[in-house]
Image (cartoon, rainbow over all chains, first blue to last red; front, top):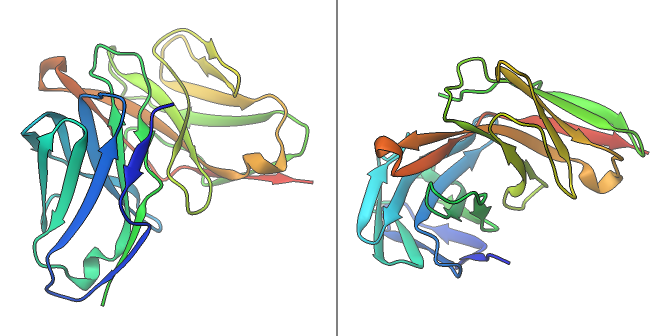
Length: 114
Length: 114
């Protein structure tokens, strides 16, 4: 089974801190994604990557950056955490568009910024 | 913007079939329909996907109308463990088809009643 592992289940950080959320997948998928999920808003795409060192903005990239130095790892960075970034963060991976596979999600990281 | 419209919530009796509708009237010819579900505090779980033809797997069936403007997810014998938020999603090709992304809506909360 494809596994997408997010490094932390719960995080509490202070306003202004630099925060790293890590995601690792073990099935050699080309695509990786970061979403945030908020009540009433569903899942919103922050950034995605379709290859090593390649990254593209999603719908809500402001206040975030990403890094993909290795194929299996996709990091989300909050440059200066703010309280409005308190949310559930979900990482996902998928094969390339030529593949028929579905997207596999991690269990999520619930981030609280105080 | 989400490309799908789903009812906010539905009830279903345990043991009966659950039929979850989805409208995607602006879907393009090369865009797949995916269904995921999310049980409280977990990451979304892949259920099924399709392009034009009806699909069936061990979890569910997907019925897509001939004009592809709507679809229905069918859980043949709902159990209490099927209580979850169900997302109907369009997979959108990007960068000339080199990659793709999922656009989520707010989903349908299915409550299976004993």
